[in-house]
Image (cartoon, rainbow, N blue to C red):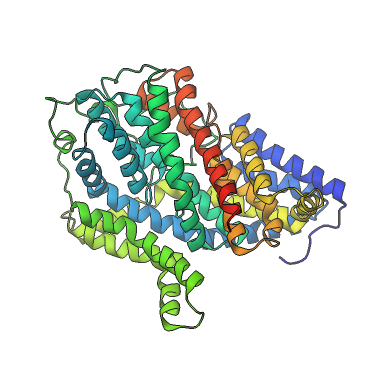
Length: 488
């Protein structure tokens, strides 16, 4: 929609924004509503308080919902399919085992961070945890490295990719809302991801392991008990695999036995086939970004790279290659491959609905004129757009526990500011929002309880380890964004 749906003044629009966001926060954090319903209700509160006609509010919401679902939903679905084939074919296990079994001693935490970042590219957070936690526990039992020195780097690698690097839902939503360049954002996100993983992973893991002594649990925990209803459960969808049950993970046998032999029979398509499948969509999207930066517009090479680097094309290519390189090489017939691909979609229904409803909420913000009011105020106060996006995302993340809701709302609020920025700054704004959406995970975030149960920690220990690690990721990631802004 191009015209404002209300002619309310600045004060009324600010009140509408505050009440709309407050409704979303209270319904998720206090009433324990699903974020999908909370976002719909919040959009209604926002529109009506701003003085918009109910029909106009509904039209604005449905327009935003459809646009977001069409633009972002397809990418999330394709990424989930690649992740499901990687998980079910044993390809992810093959990557983990090859790297972990090839290093030892002080290098293990660094290897764990690297492998978590690699398999975290196409996998949602929960799937990565399900795959990596058994490895972490088994390696910790047979070495003297320590559980947290291994576990924190693994969690950091997964979480950084989840918050900063597309095709994960949060970065995709921010890119779509701000009209940022995906290839450039991906490139800058990877630049920020490296130092962030290092500091929040091996460096912090070594520090906190000395201060929070943690024995290795006898068995891995599936950890669905004691997890809060509502708030962040859909933030990190399971992408085709259920939580691991305690009795499904075998205890290790003799020290020194290869990890992969202890995880049960798995059909492994091969290390390099899995690695190339994971990296293919990323390489294609990066190639498009590089071509747009350095090649003359209209040249044949640039035109080709722009087409194959389109996110939909790159991820579709990833799915097609995965069907052969992972599915067929793992011994799946066509029916089994189809079942894995189809099975990847139901678990992400929740995240797709949240993302789509968030797009509707964002559109009501924009069409009511709230974003313009905040953008004008930020410009008049000479307030940095990157700082504003980060702080808004931090506030909503801490209040709701939902990284996706934080990303959606912050992007909608600062979207008008993006029109005044150049292309690299818009990409940095998307990353600043992504960094803010990871700030201080605590008891209203499902990820908090998942990590607590898997590692057998108390609430206090989880705050000292996981919550602090997430905060470090957020702060270091944002610091990297601000540093890049000085040069771009």
